[in-house]
Amino acid sequence: MALIDDCFWANGPRPGGLYSFPGPQIRGHPALEPVKQTVNPMVTGTSVLGVKFDKGVILACDTLGSYGSMARFCNISRMLRVNDTTVMGTGGDYADFQFIKSIIEQRVISDACAGDGFQYSPVSLHSWLTRVHYNRRSKFDPLWNVTIVAGMEQDKPFLGFVDKLGMAYEDTSIACGYGAYIAQPLMREELERVGARGLTEQEAKDLIHRCMTVLYYRDARSWNNYEIATVTSDRKAQIEGPLKVTGDWSIASLVKGYE
Image 1 (cartoon, helix red, strand yellow):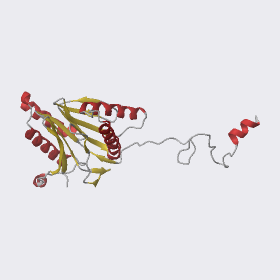
Image 2: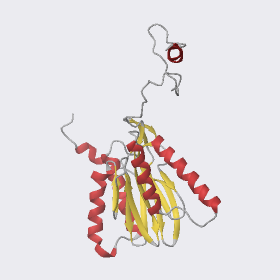
Image 3: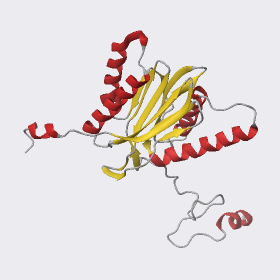
Image 4: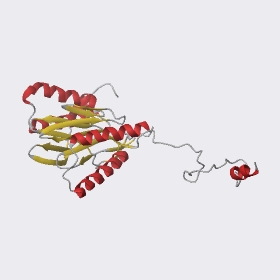
């Protein structure tokens, strides 16, 4: 009995303190201290838009990082060129995007060093991200992001969505953030108008520019600078920008009832 007492109560707590049980310590506190996770994002990005056209796929997002309601960082990139065939854009917490980006970039380097000819395709990256997000959400420590993956898979355009719960789907046009409510109807309307022939690359770029303009008018967390990533069957993935939306606020004088 004395041996047990010596084991458990040696170097006991100070009066009014807590006993530190054997085991790993968390930043100098007892192991009984609860583990704290991020419960809400800090610096965030808003909408990401993606649409397929006849020879490829296009992706776009603005360059703003919002600290709450403040436009804190106005020149950040939320887009990643993974390789010649694959790109991705992310909305939500920017720090979590940087974490995912660092892992993907290291895996791309490892694939290149292996020299076996294998690399990320948009389908494989999309599938991997669903597992990563689902794994983290199952630990009650989700990555607070929504990611859109775009690229060419065997000369066919691919566009996929993954959210922080691991929910995923593919579609001809995808938008996240406020763009899911404002821009997605515009993209679907245009795709229905052109029908089976599909959009041309220039029509897709014009459509994306119109959607980004509408978001700049209507979304309080958007910005008038944005980047575009384009992937086609005969051209490697490339990111353009930042491009600029020129707003026309002359109609503001006609708005009444808010004096």
